[in-house]
Amino acid sequence: MMYGMVNTNCEATIRLVVGNGNSQRLAIEAVIDTGYTGFLTLPPEIIIALNLPWTGVDRATLGDGSEATFEVYAATVIWDGEYRNIPVNEAQTDPLLGMSLLYGCDLRIQAVERGTVTIEVLR
Image 1: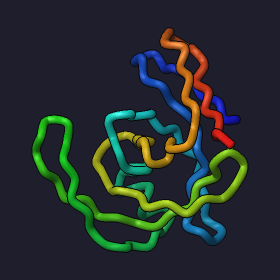
Image 2: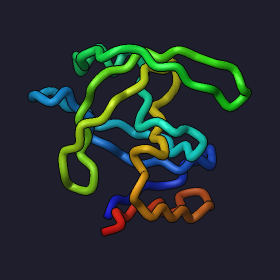
Image 3: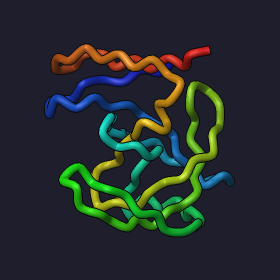
């Protein structure tokens, strides 16, 4: 089971360890975004700091209906105590955790400031 917290902006957040598959790792705070169907977004400065390998580009439809192109990188996250290889979309935002990473999990949010966020992998 993984735990996070609802921050003062009323955002459900969780701490993740992200790496490049080698020895470089970084702990980040990601906002859970159930409207985002991808795995994870990271800003360019984190992608550069981790030296993530570029894998291509992807197109996506944003919440306002517009289309955007994202640079995609390969990363490793520690998810429920295990290493998992995932694609990461580069975006000029705080890190966002999307539904593809949450797929197969039970997500519970106590929707109050400092409320508990619980993610449990369904077995």
